[in-house]
Image: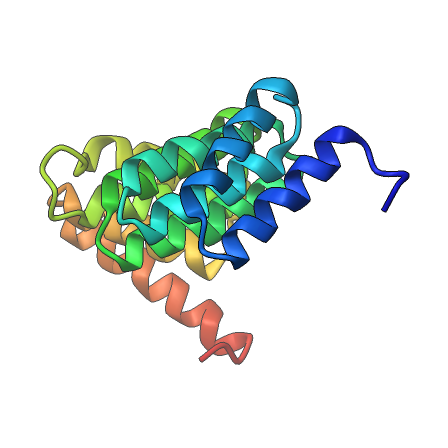
Length: 185
């Protein structure tokens, strides 16, 4: 591919190094690309994938936050959802919160705000769990998407995390009614 830029060539070389098992060399190439092309989100993303594979979740969250900061609008939400969800399911709540916060700093999105609120409400990690902030994010999400089952359910979870159980039940019942009315399982 003689018409590719030097940055494109280095990116493809790094991908080849991954395929050949030279992960250290690939990561060095991604670091070179991040320094030389800081507005390109792909090197950050590939580096984050390598870090996740090595179990370096907070480093990966930092890398993907870099990608989110420069990725095209819309793409940054996909990155936040994918990586944040992976971190959350893996019980890496600090990493999930970092990724969701990076996306929300770039652009508000009700779904991502709900995800962050949920993590802050239910995390077993005391350094992450923050019921007050959880409720703030959940309420912002519900204000932006008042008929969203996810947003309403997240408000219920956040209220419960704050010990406000009667209100939590009301939001959960409202979410359930909307889900039933729209045939959502």
